[in-house]
Amino acid sequence: MRSLIPLIAISLLFSLLPLAAEEIAGPNYDESKVPAYTLPDPLVFEDGKPVKSAEDWSKRRAELLNLFAEHVYGKTPVGRPDDMWFEPRKKVDDFLGGKATMEEIRIHFSAGDKGPFVDLLLVKPAKKKEGGFPTFVSPNFPGNQGINASPEITITQSWVRETKDAVKEGMVVDHHATEKSRGVQTSRWALEKIVDQGVAVATFYYGDLDPDFDDGFENGIHALYGKPAENEWGAIGAWAWGCSRVLDYLETDGSIDLKRVAVMGHSRLGKTALWAGAQDERFAMVVSNDSGCGGAALSRRRFGERVARINTSFPHWFVKNFRKYNENEAALPVDQHELIALIAPRLVYVASAVEDEWADPKGEFLSALHAGPVYELLGKKGVGVAEMPGLNTPVGETVRYHIRSGKHDVTDYDWDQYLKAILSL
Ligand code: GCU
View (spheres, rainbow, N blue to C red):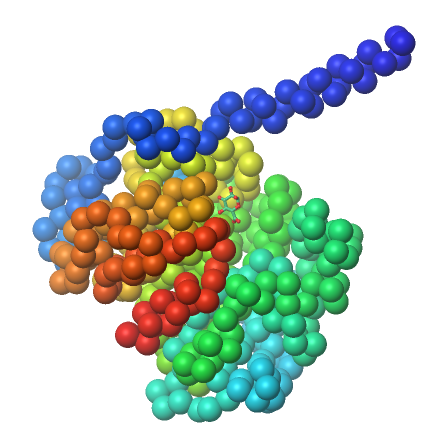
């Protein structure tokens, strides 16, 4: 009996721990409990002076980029590593039943082949296109083999997450992807639809850059640059940086339309796409698919996932400073509409799903809406409506938004809209 007491104490402790975390940042799904808030004005400098011209905006833009680096995502090394090099590893001419070609290119971040790298999977329409292919740069969750069942795609050797289902299905063994993981997320990658429209996809496993767990930044790209200081990049910063390095490769490819390269991501990778597109103006378009807290959703609404919750569950995603705003969002010097504004005057597409309350669809819409004044200053239109549109009714031209039926996911419906958008450029 006596020996049971410590056991009971331990299990009690464990049953209390998740509760405590829940209390820190329990989700609110009640619109009437959204606090009154005032958003920081993207068109007012830190010193209170107004931003009146495009020239002013370029200074304000730099100021906002610094604020996001300092308070949200951490400072990112500028540009590519000097020793970066590209190693073509595979080419298949007859991909997707002959509709497409596929190439695998290893992007090495240091000289030799012992350093960190990203394995890029590039799927292009088989038919050449004058002016080159518009292209989506888009990181993936399962490893490249997970986006399509083709046996030609090389299975990632990098560390992958062990979700309960993936382990049960034998798709991940000992943190490594297996044959069974081929095509596990096919439904999220409308590859045939995309290449049928003459558009290419450049994808890579996000964990190549930084494995998605709180490991003290000892591996991935952080290892090359040295353990980040407190004010430096977390995992989202690393994944976003990787999107830019893929674009560096695309610049050397010769068959890409470099005026029409979009960065697109879902969920945590939607947060990543926004931060990548905000920093790197070579991306002509940015797509945030259900990116939620720390992505398109306004932090000050405190709806669904909140800052305290995300910093507790994923302490490695953001800069340490971001934790200062746990349950204190009103003190943030920025909010996420200003992240969208950093993409101006380029095309931005914010998408929500109605069942994805965790990501706060209304907060995502409001970010798109409140980025409008910056677009207008630069001669473009904002989202073009004052209220959230109905289900499955896309709005906007340069700032686009839709809320579709269904859950947190990427569907063909979403891709249809992103394709129209990229082809409008
Ligand atoms: C969790 C997390 C979200 C994130 C999502 C995802 O739900 O709380 O912030 O967007 O994972 O990336 O799938």
